[in-house]
Image 1 (tube, one colour):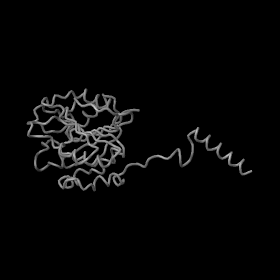
Image 2 (tube, rainbow, N blue to C red; image 1 turned 30 degrees about the horizontal axis):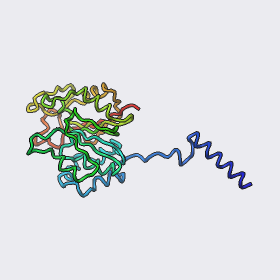
Image 3 (cartoon, rainbow, N blue to C red; image 1 turned 60 degrees about the horizontal axis):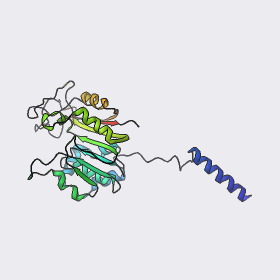
Image 4 (cartoon, rainbow, N blue to C red; image 1 turned 180 degrees about the vertical axis):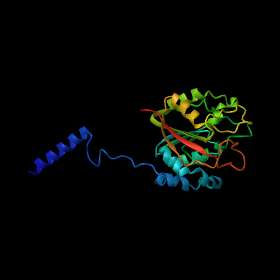
Length: 259
């Protein structure tokens, strides 16, 4: 009798496997990423982070941003325009040794003026710095996420020579199906037109313009975070003015590549 029951149990298990319905085994999903997920908290606590980065956390809400992006261990992320590496450092710890971060950067301005990210890379074995420019980069593996913080508006300045529709299509192609594109930028008034002279421009962009352009490349707008919003910013002042610098009203958008 025991052998008979054991046989029935094995048959039921195999049938359930074939049908994809083994409770607690086949249906288990990865937990949702939150601002207090262990890998997010570890990224914030990383002792290699400079104090200047930590001082900016209160304004930039990095835990909420990474949770909104859904960053997971093992992810491949392109940080476009990484600057001094504020987010690249965080991503490097959050994705862990099995993940990778690509800093998509411009070439050095001059031999004696290397990009700041070049000093970050030796501290993290899973960061790769690319300096082919914003439109000349290639990565030989599909990405889980592309992250663009506060520079999408810069792509319209002639000095950068960026074909924005082409850039958006290239990002779409670089992502795996289901991958995400996160864009953070300084909000302008609806209908705002970018001044092509960066010295005269206020360095803001209309959120609706970003949505139109990115969805035209095939992306689906999935969600918007309010964590960087500032209703006290009237959105017509240059972002570098001392009374608003670091406190601008910013939109945070998550687009997804269908898959």
